[in-house]
Length: 319
Image (tube, rainbow, N blue to C red; front, side, top):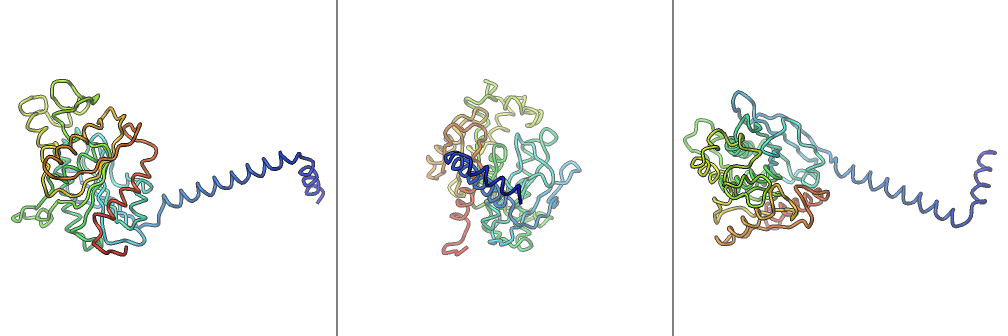
């Protein structure tokens, strides 16, 4: 009782401006704490998660997909290419908060992993993520998604793999013994970050060797033939989305920073310009001052969710 009375007396003793300042500081602290709590809550939606679903094998190792199903699924799926520098984490490597806007939007998220280079080549990774999409489509009914409305997203190497699906994904082999391989690997919408699109022209990238060869730090990732220039020209062309643009590509959104030195903005604008020449629209959004990643990328993923809303949901959908 005496202590409480003493505190009140001390408070009244303080100058009015000090009391006002302390109240303002307290209010600010409360607001910050509430904001942090709200952001944490948003970044950790209620989901059902199954990690390590095997979709194939390579070199005796399992290829895996993690399946993240939101509490209120909208019946649509988005595949995330888990790849940076064409290296991929294993089961459980995708943090939920990274795709929270997609999960909040009702999308079932499929984290597609591949064997990392140089243990497997980049070309192997392209083949394997195609298999991943075929697997997702084959099991669409199990996961409660529409097999004809699958989106794809990723960043850097994950963006490159996404564009390879957009440009080269397509029907499977009807004569394949495995029914999964009969499915299509086509995707219906793409939203990605800073992809490499032309491996034969690395432009101003710090990875440009200056002779038209493969990226300096990733030579081994393209296999031993990458050191043979005539063979590299074939490998690089086959593995570059820019050489496979076609009229039936899905809608593509690319976010790219104008200060990126690893995969410079020109990689995306070249792809956009080549697509335009062929009568196809590709949307490139430039992040001013953005390098190979930036702090507000979580906001961009929210915009990706809106992109998928616009291009995956059926017309007049109320979801």
